[in-house]
Length: 241
Ligand SMILES: NC(=O)c1ccc[n+]([C@@H]2O[C@H](COP(=O)([O-])OP(=O)(O)OC[C@H]3O[C@@H](n4cnc5c(N)ncnc54)[C@H](OP(=O)(O)O)[C@@H]3O)[C@@H](O)[C@H]2O)c1
Image (tube, rainbow, N blue to C red; front, side, top):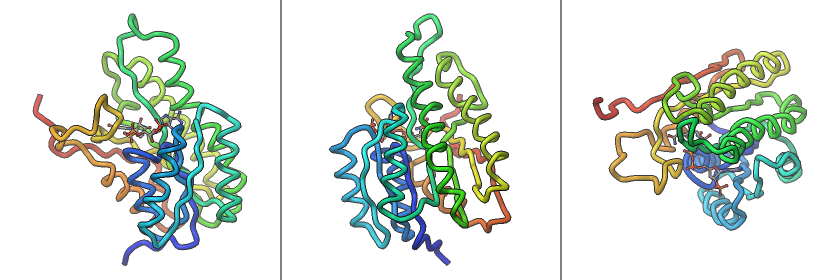
């Protein structure tokens, strides 16, 4: 039987493109009320309208730069005001800028830390009081296999995703007895706008946003006693090295 999320509400950061957008669409198609969000107000309005039209759930748009603590607080409050509660937070907004240490400038380092780590803290902190009131609440953080495997040029990105993996596990331990389940999803390559000029048709071997959306739906279908806390997902047939 298909998962029915009628009556459940969700905030998905960075959901105008890529993984976040696919997750937002899937949740609305499962009946949830969803806030679509990103830094670009025009995209937020257009994508929220498009996803809302999918039904049977609904979508509204609230712009939010997750590097801005007050904007994160407004995002969460806006969701609660619109839907009356908050059940699911997907901390998805993130970016990767790759360069060796000797070429990594301070601004690029700072932007990644602020987006990939500070943003998760700000949104989670604002959401927790609401999530703790719910019956089946969930925080889902988009980590990465780059949170387990370091690579040359990953000095900043690896730092954020290793950090996010540790942070998510600590959050899980803090919140499991409060009725809030916390999961870290760690994908390998996904064909999205994450990569310069993407998505690329020649990168068809990569995962698609829809694969991550299916994973989120499967996760939400688990009964309250079960908590898949860390999930790795990778392309099954990457090019041979
Ligand atoms: N693609 C991959 O191969 C891959 C693999 C593993 C993990 N991930 C993780 O998956 C997550 C989503 O990535 P994606 O591949 O879907 O990327 P994407 O296609 O580039 O989408 C990123 C989304 O986040 C938004 N965003 C960027 N900076 C933001 C900020 N400061 N505040 C709010 N929104 C912001 C973007 O919109 P605006 O720019 O308009 O704000 C966009 O909607 C990231 O955390 C990434 O690290 C991706």
